[in-house]
Amino acid sequence: MVKLIHTLADHGDDVNCCAFSSSLLATCSLDKTIRLYSLSDFTELPHSPLKLHTYAVHCCCFSPSGHILASCSTDGTTVLWNTQNGEPLAVMEQPSGSPVRVCQFSPDSTCLVSGAADGTVVLWNAQSYKLYRCGSVKDGSLVACAFSPDGNLFVTGSSCGDLTVWDDKMRCLHSEKAHDLGITCCDFSSQPVSDGEQGLQYFRLASCGQDCQIKIWVVSFTHILGFELKYKSTLSGHCAPVLACAFSHNGQMLVSGSVDKSVIVYDTNTENILHTLTQHTRYVTTCAFAPNILLLATGSMDKTVNIWQFDLETPCQARSAEDEAKQFPEDWSEDDVSVWLCAQGLNDLVGIFKMNNIDGRELLNLTKESLADDLKIDGYSYEKEAMENWISKKKRTSPMTNLVLPSVVLTPNRTLKMAISRWLETHQK
Image (cartoon, rainbow, N blue to C red):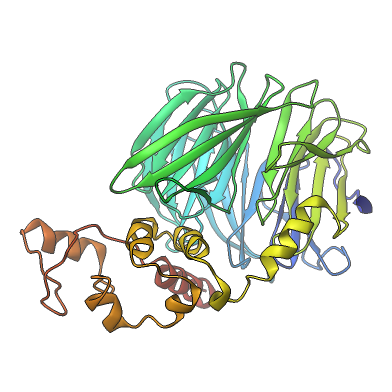
């Protein structure tokens, strides 16, 4: 069961976007403001609303740590805010000056993507606030963006209906027509899907559009096999354009909001409809799940944000209860270890771990020596540029141990990268 537990009605115009951190809810509107609420009792924070944009605010999103909030606007800027005091940290202007329609942090907080009405997409350094790379799509406005959970790529969606896939260097990997009348939103599931035959890991991607459809895609990307995007299925239920879609944090549910004023919650495994919510009186423009608790926020052109709470006895939660029994690593199976490796961005190690039958108990007993001697993994972290330079000189030994490297595939240490990013977030002025 799902029930409406609170309605926020503080905005003076259409609600365009809502986003959760672990402790806050952010909403933004055509009224040029961003509002922040505590999840403990849904009271508005003392420093809310946040006011700096001079035109409508289209999108807002939290950094993974929740310390920073990004917002973007028709005024052509993306603003970073300190969520603890509401002070602006940076105002980043789209190079073209075009209205910015969407913004999104990378999973490790190091980068921020902003997409504009003229089709330009900018990758910003989220620590220095400087432009890192810039690109553009052939046609249409950029209205949607989502990072893959491992941070290796991100997807943008345009008003012309194209899904475009970019790597973390802003190289275009793929583009295809996904929705004939235009894309409105896209989102990745944070939980990987396993291919039992080849031991590969994939991510689900959802996209929705003006064609009244929600499409599910399967995305894979490894440095060895490259990138692949496959259409999987289409979800039915809405009778008008679908404006928003979002996966739950555990990947078990997908929610959508539509011009038909309804919100539909799907079971991602069976693709059946679990709930249809019809309390909004105008178009539903945005929806988002909370990361740690079973809350759903939906925003609308009726100027309200509804907060919904899920009963723990939903079919999705019954399955999640089984997963809770595996929350301790020593109870993980080999497949659970593979899922964990992919979530850490270590897809290239899945085959090696499976070949050596590494389950949860074995994982906890791994040492740097066993990684190097038994699994033939170097076990040290290096600067990527320095290591690429080392390999380019045809050196096939470890810089630290001088042992022969069985593979020259570089695996990102995203745990270290995330720790550095969070330290920078905490200590920046």
